[in-house]
Amino acid sequence: MINNKKWNENAVAECFEPCAKEILLNGYFLINNEYIIDLGSIELYYHEETGPIKDYIMYHRKERVTSRIKEFNNGNLPYFEFGSMNLHQSGVDVTFENGEKEKEYRASFLIRSYRVLRKSDDIANDIIPFDPHSTHIFDDMFYKGISFNKEKKTTIEWIERKKGVYDIIDKIPRQNVAKYTENMEKVKIANGETMQSKEILRINGINYRRDMRPWQFKRLNIKEK
Image 1 (cartoon, one colour):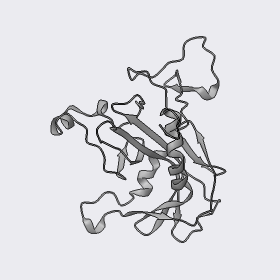
Image 2 (cartoon, one colour):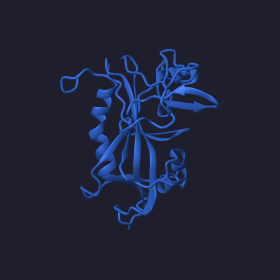
Image 3 (cartoon, helix red, strand yellow):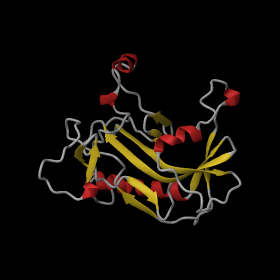
């Protein structure tokens, strides 16, 4: 329960919204003490391993763990340490999972859009646009690679910025995420079924229902490439 409301997908969004505001409006990543990764939008991913709320597109959940990883971990998929970064084929997630018994949820936010600023740039600069391609962040955040040499490793710091630079975010459905059945299959749109275009997701020539949960959080009035 949250504020006497039923715990459901809307409550998940309501619970995460203050965190999203803090992440998007009041801070940024400082890379190697050289430049800034400024976030324009993030997407919440939340999957309960034992509870009713499922997010089958999520990469880090027990149904997707490989047999070898299960073998090395007694059949389990370990939970990420709070604040860990998960690098995967869609970009970079910041994770906040909970493996405690009867909680057991996987949670993270994907950096959906961002921009690169010099450390000396005005963070309120509205001329430099945001890149909406989440996979591009590998080139910008890890331009030195991931080194085994401790002296050359990439350092990533979270820096709080002056309050009030921005103050509004919007909640919208996530980008390119289809609705799934309990069998972990994408829900196709039946022939003759009438839907609004925003509820349709076309993948490889097939129309699917879009996951309409408002789990993308975005700063208003930002420019994108």
